Length: 267
Image 1 (spheres, rainbow, N blue to C red):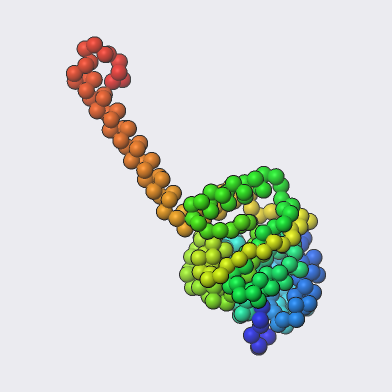
Image 2 (cartoon, rainbow, N blue to C red):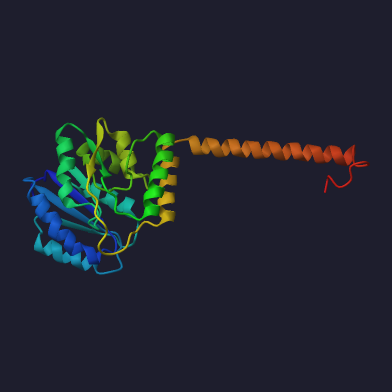
């Protein structure tokens, strides 16, 4: 692994022991077919199952293209991807989930878009295989986020994305600890685009994103890229304060001047 690879694939892993072997069986052949030199970086985000042991075995089988980063705790998908960006050496970097909801065979579509001159390629799931409430919540949050931040991401929940080397370096150098990486990359991109990709139903393990986590992710995204929420809460605070002052003045006037014929209002 002395030569610099043309492609780096970053895969965060958290408690995915049931899905990893199926991922290996599809990811490596899909990348071999591309005819590019590549490396795969698995970032074990403090998994509490046998994920680390399975990743170790895979490294021993394919040490030429496999790299494994082990976290000593669970720091979240964002930090895992940033770690992957810091260690990735490829001229292009692709991120994807470990649960095979992002088919590895679709990576070629992202690279084809980059061949056309795009430095950042997002993805849109053609047919989503998520529960109805996740689909509904995602669409609603996407509309709110785009109206407030002006960041265009049709499907922000799909992790299958491709980044140029310059964008990866910029994201890693920003040292952001909570900002949504695809949105940050979008702001750095000169010529971003999106492509449609297939989406598969999760066949093993459980989703790591609850409704609360999705809401929190979008809250961080909106507040990190726009002053509108701060301005809205500031205006609301001013309005509440104004109403409180007016009410207080009414009470004072009532107590000092009108208390004789309007008993009870002050209370």
